Image 1 (cartoon, one colour):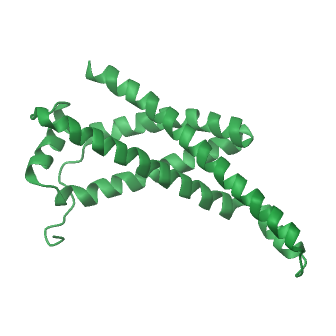
Image 2 (cartoon, rainbow, N blue to C red):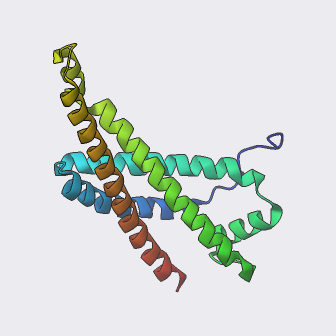
Length: 181
């Protein structure tokens, strides 16, 4: 299956430009949601929104270019026809598009959540300071309280990323609907 793997000779420049437009639309929407729900300052929320969108976009294009050579000929033909001519040959493609859109939405949501978790963990300077200052013996009540707080923060982060991703995908869907008319 990977014997015939090679880089494509023609890159979908229109697809790249639309992805750039989508990222430019998603960044301010998601930065606003991060700012209002997680109480980051505007600079920090913009940094996190830019980071998670660019990383997820790069990972998405990588997955696209790796998986495209493995697609059946009919799907490749439909994909190429849509990327270059903005239409489909077969009318039976709509259920596949809906399924693919749902998969992309939830995959992007999971990628953004994990990317933001890694960024928050790696850029959190107070985390390293707390470990140095922490005493070796802590009470069970304090450990339980920290675990509950971390659980709440994790739930809040999931909800925030889900809301931000939903709002940005809604804006992108509206633009795609205007594009198709």
